[in-house]
Image (tube, rainbow, N blue to C red; front, side, top):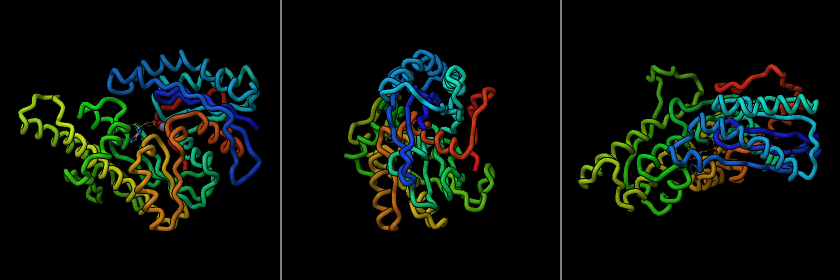
Amino acid sequence: MIILGIETSCDETAAALVDETGNAARPWHVRSSVVASQVEIHREWGGVVPELSARQHIRDVCGVVERALAEAGSPRFDAIAVTQGPGLVGSLLVGVSFAKSLAWARSVPLVAVHHLAGHIESLTLEGGEMPLPAIVLVVSGGHTSLYRIATPGSYELLGRTRDDAAGEAYDKVAKLLGLGYPGGPVIDRLAQTGNDRAIAFPKTRLTHADRNAPHLPGRRDFSFSGLKTSVLRHVNSRRTALGLPDGASLPDVELRDICASFQRVVVETLVDRLFDAAREHGARSVAIAGGVSANRRLREDAARRGVAREVGVFIPAIALSTDNAAMIAAAGLRAFRAGTRGTFDMNADAALRLAP
Ligand code: KG4
Ligand code: ZN
């Protein structure tokens, strides 16, 4: 069976064809995967502008799907998987409407996919089925969530960010340092030559005393907005100390130290939570998916911790970790084989939850 995946939840228009291998350990094979990134459009505004994103998806979606079909070498597909949510509602609507129309025109079934199920299934798409139970950290510009997978296709939420996503914190910190958008790759690069102990930025600790979100047993939530505020305070105080005007760039060496110190706190927080959850749940593997998993230090620290804890660590290649439609097709195949079918009255859902 071949499935066409369509993804338009944020600033990438993507289509892919994925088929089944017949091998239960490595169930899927990518025939083609096309991504049209809007990053150059949004860079000018310092972040994703929802209305521009939706309009660009309309311009790109036909061409991207046509290219995915052409690159697969055959225009045939047996079902369509589309991201239903979460994401920007105008952007999601483009993909959902397009997928419904094409499914109707071709008389093939439709499968609605949760964007994070896609990120999680990118792991199996790349590395084959993980030893279960597995703990998966999905960490991107829009999400920082920890899931337990006890059986294939079941995703139990263990915790998520209460404010900014980790990628969002990278993007906001890069913006306040004058480093442009998206911030993750540039902070990652500058951090390599900075001193990660130069500035003692605080790690947020969420406790029972937090009245905004009552503590649930076993929950492992994240919070990154306090860290972003500490970076802002540090930058402002350094500008004052150096007699620089508001918005002026700090000396290069200080920027590198800030990036390295910020990144150390983010990565230690993510890796600690991931491996604490793995120990608590007796996990046989841990995994990281989503755009931030491209981060060099996160990859290295997680791999090292995995060796020390004797637990397998799965992280997809960069092309599968940032937004793409092959992961949506893979999650669609998993759901289709479990009996899930979309209906033509299905709608985009910006706040869609991933059922346990
Ligand atoms: O998964 P993704 O492509 O889109 C979302 O669903 O958000 O992730 C994009 C996010 C951005 O916030 C970007 O700054 C971050 O991933 N990112 C990184 C790196 N590369 C991308 N963050 C840290 N280090 C990186 N190397
Ligand atoms: Zn994503």
